[in-house]
Image 1 (tube, one colour):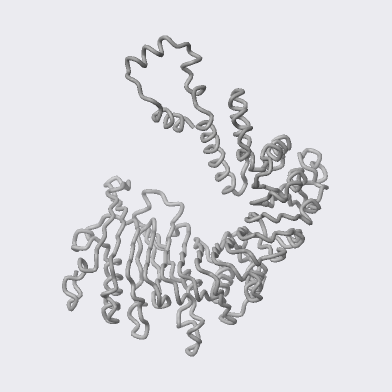
Image 2: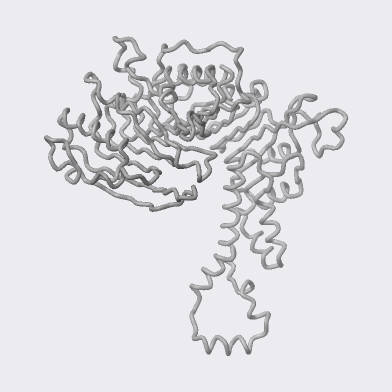
Length: 533
């Protein structure tokens, strides 16, 4: 807020230092007060900036606890002028939310009244506990009165400890039930988010089949896929986080796809949660791999996020492979795959991420298909931009030097690929053996980008091209394939972004440089016949 004050002050009329000092000496302190001199339109902009930032923070959190309207309320209590400005802008009250187990109904009612007829964002909570059926608080009953103004709705499924003995100590009524969640008509609702950090929900989501949401086009689900939603027809964006400890979530999604109930879906994001809390070894596999293959022709952009940890969950890995191997994306052009994981020590002092088996859970190669499988069912036939993100978490600076990610990148399954980007916060070692099979053709790449971290080593200066040996070998193999196919002339440039780290004698790791380099095709190969840089 102060930074915005300074920005506004810098744009005000300038005066000479002497005249300014003289003027300040003559003016009383009340006139010199800078905050009081801010015009109303600038003050409204500051309020809007605060409100927008707090809304984004609140909406992104799984368990938010500071309603944005509370900050606006506090600002409006500074003085009468602040109050008049805040009340003059109903947009500042369009975020209807409260804190967990302590619904601030006075604030909620104030927001509903002061937002007037503007579209609103609503956060609702359904409480789950072992002693009672699911129940909601007073916020739902108050907010449903303006359901015709709902533009965005976030529903949090909160697991709380509640028994008949301590029920009287709660600020919510556990006997209330969820009747207020049924038969809601929200004709203007465009975005719905369902958040559950516990086990998957089934019966708890049945109220959604009674909703009237004809304009809903964005849906985000966290362990709570709403297969009984009244209508999927208008949905264009779907963001799912699945814990593959039960077959229901992924099977429900596949059933909707196979029955063409989401015909307009263009943006799909799937995150696989391998958290050990969700492991179940007593449930059978629900999809028969590798058939039937279901194409989703409407998808244009696809995001996949998966993880690796110190422990293997064979059931979860099998479920993940079955899910992606049962799908194809014939018209997707933009694909992003993110590998996340905690570092694991394979052999001290060199911890590794072996990502090949993770990649195989997502990518289908010819080796895992029958020899006569129909080419029209290729998984990603039109992807022209591929982004691989590799993220290592839990790293201490002194352990960074030993980290490396080894992964398989089967380029031959992307026949239309033009742009390839690999981003990693640790050193990367791409495998090259998939590039050497004669029956596999590499796509006619135009641009390759490596955005990586690496540790300074003697190899960095031993070659005229500043790549680690692994990258050098991989890129040379790709270039050889492109030249053999006669498509090397289509290649445009290689972009290399490196965050180089150096290990000091005392074992500490420091940043040595952060360099971005671009190499055009003619700068790479001096002699195409010899293949040398």
